[in-house]
Length: 218
Image 1: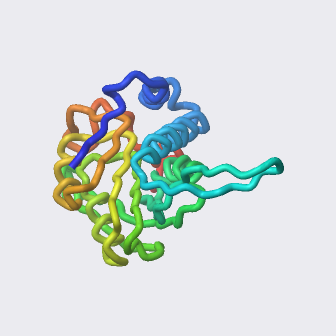
Image 2: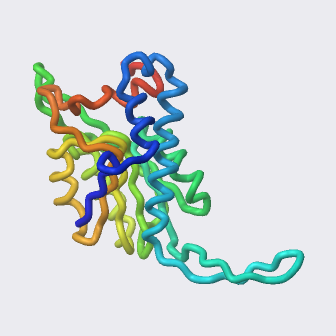
Image 3: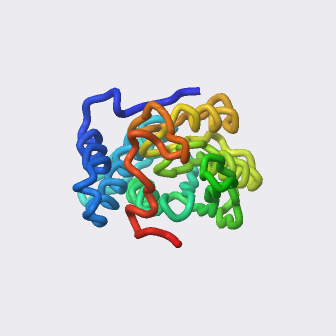
């Protein structure tokens, strides 16, 4: 299984990541969402290089030309609510893809907020059978919600290939997700941080992505 970490590369993604992490920039909610979307677009472009292609003849006003186009049928799925701006970046690139949405969220299971469970209550997606499935979620902390989403989506059929895409990941979450994925899957990360704190937030991370995008939840 391949894990790609863009933090190891020199690209403008690092500028967007720096702004996402910066407390002063986080006060600008629109900028925060836009940076999540930009990273989604750039990650989708890099992912597009791994797809299968076939030539298609296109007729111009002056002649014809063969252009290689992706032949994969795709489903872009996201985890509500934090995944919405990341998802928007991906579907700007893969605008012919089907879309899927999973409501999977973590819940603290003890008073000290140090143990986390995952609750999945909603799935809206077409069949992924024989398709390239791309699951996008900005935060991969414990990996519980991503693993639950993979399980839910796989019930609609066996995909051709699975890509898991996140903005920021913790090693613990990566290990959990690896166990839930077929061996030929790929995990894409804009950054991989050292670990999590007792409340299961990625450190240094950038905080709660859903709250920073849309406001604190009750």
